[in-house]
Image 1 (cartoon, rainbow, N blue to C red):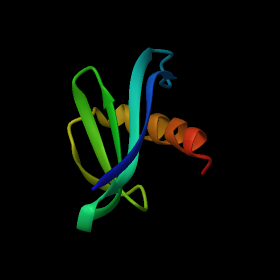
Image 2 (image 1 turned 60 degrees about the vertical axis):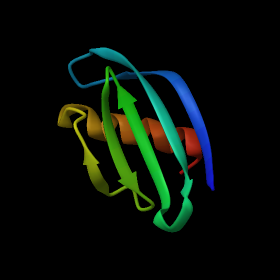
Image 3 (image 1 turned 135 degrees about the vertical axis):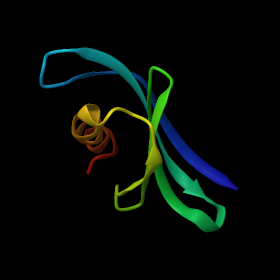
Length: 76
């Protein structure tokens, strides 16, 4: 069973002032535990329950800003 919450079309601006739209998904997946998935322009970043990198191809320049925005939405 998978429990999840999604936030879609969230604008995020990087240090250079470039804005992109992100989708965030947080949830719990079977034995794997909690996770967060951040997607943008066909790229993704998968994080564990501590928001540590698991895998993904999202450009690194977006990691910190996207994670900060995710934390805002989940109240962290």
